Length: 357
Image (cartoon, rainbow, N blue to C red; front, side):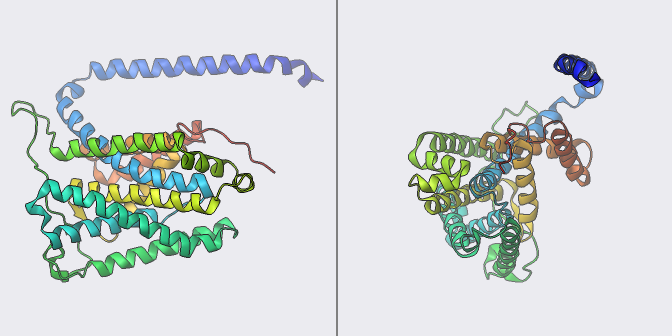
């Protein structure tokens, strides 16, 4: 009876609590901004802060590309494809192989174009083959079964990378040490494009990331939102059974999703190899972890959220590496993830979906 009396006041109380929380948050943000503006440390490190931001945004866009593949596959069949990061690793190894076999370092811009065509095709085809052989036969199986299958594919990819590291090419050091990190030659100039008086360093590599990734992301968004296949993808993601009853070839849609996700992983592999210049057969774990975290942070199944999550993780890692220590990067990334999920469990741009029973 007493609860019934207070029930009409509950929305008002919640509204007042939310307003109080917003006021407190605004005070905290405003006070922090004022303190930073008058903090001598910020003035002394403003150029380093800007440089780390450039590095963080570059790596964040790469992470966002990989996260798009994660979130597309999850949005369609609700599969966390843990082999996706190792697919990027294989794409990096193919990039290095093509550079060494075709001597692309002598024709840098042609070499970049060749890599951006060949590697995405390779990763796309490999992703489709994996879906056809490992995932499609388990489509009706429990989710845990498919998840274990994805982990098994990841181990297969890691061992393929280990064997690939024994290739008898100069870029692989003659295959003497398959486990050692491999150095990727610079195909693009490393000199800063800014005047010598500017303390910032902005190279052709940084511009390459923006020129390649942003149009690709915009094209993907337009494709999903404005084409028949994109509409079929969204319909399949919403309700696969209803989509099949409406005549949508669900299996083909899923295959196309794996193909697009693999192509994005291939582009990310090329950019990662050329930007960071070091690859290894175990790098897929780190890339996959960052990309999966970005997808969850932005809202799993949300394409803009995956990109936003990648940018956040890239910036957090860069700031941690530049101002704290690289050993604390993972701690900082997952601290941000936990902080976001505590207040918004669906992610930054994710929406809460009611579970159907």
